[in-house]
Image (tube, rainbow over all chains, first blue to last red; front, top):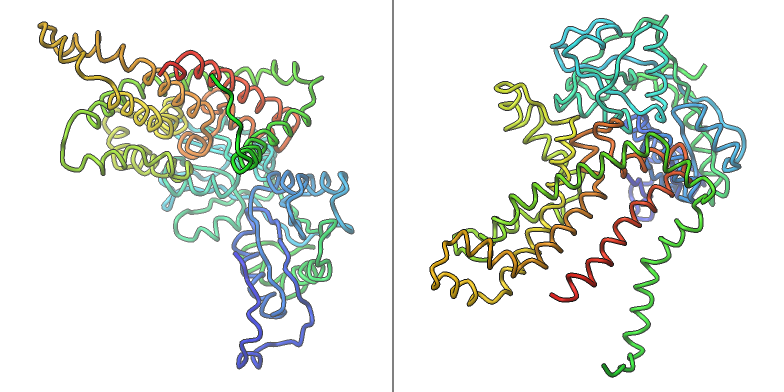
Length: 247
Length: 261
């Protein structure tokens, strides 16, 4: 999605809320679970700074990491875990230190009406339930394993999908009965799926760090976007999408 | 044969074209950690994925031969209304994004699919997340290559041999197996190998329709994709193995079969 600046046409400038002098295009590489919320943030950021264009690349966090390390033109990296962020930092691809901007928790995703009657993590191991997971390389897959382990549940997934969005779409299509995803994903999917809460004792809180990528051409825009995400406006937008606040 | 001087307007773009294919391959070769090659190749996950890949791609080729040769024969020999449209429909996966192909397969053969829901309610058979699902996804994407190659073979063969055999009293089946098949042998073999090579490299339709689980649906390309995120160097090595298998087959093919066709 590209939110290009269309200044210079005249007549619409009066609605601009600020006299921002920022200009340039940035590519934000963001975890798949941020798709809806970051698209919304991108629109409001562009409204505040009409001279900038924000381009998003959403994918599973490890995919983004591999893309950046192979030279993809990323300006901002928003990760769904601190492990992948740590790798990018250790490999010297970040400019400055990363900041936590959101937290997310896990929930079980099932079809509307919960036809298999899944009430707790242990129900995922019931016979006749097709449980699918994210691959352990994907943060959500790693957290799912932690949640299942803390509840003492042993279950073999039928498939290790490459992102939370892939898990949700297979639940929506009816190919699988249950998966573990983020609360925000269930909220974003609306009426097509239903969530089953995981008690806090077994839940895992995912922390999302954001950072500017080394070598960005528009570091002022990149930093402004990060500040915007961390600002009270950005935080309340994230909360409307189901994220927990950063602190 | 007299060696012809190649005009520069042909040579330069041809060289760029060749470099375009060779450079990425070279990139993989240069960046692969050859010292770890043996460890990467003998890791249980790799062996498992390689075995599954071979099994699934060979099965897809077998299915392709059984279903694709009759289709090709229909296209080449029978005039029927809508033939061009049907041919286009059955070769569409060649240009369709494989992920879309995978979704389409789910909508048809998935648990809630048009045909899949009947399969599930009547026989209790579900195809997604099974090795059979992998074979289906690979067949869907790869069979068109076989159909088109075999159809071309059938169209270009000299039909007088068939007519002579018929005139001498051979049954239609006997003519087909003893005259037609040997005559189109090279195209049949080439089509089967192209189909197999395409099936071996299939990724998008497989991960969408069949999912990804080691030993059941995780073929080599899927394993390579996931390794890319945890162990890039190992994924380079595995990619090279896939490349090497295909390269050997394609080169061997050219000399032995395509060259004489």
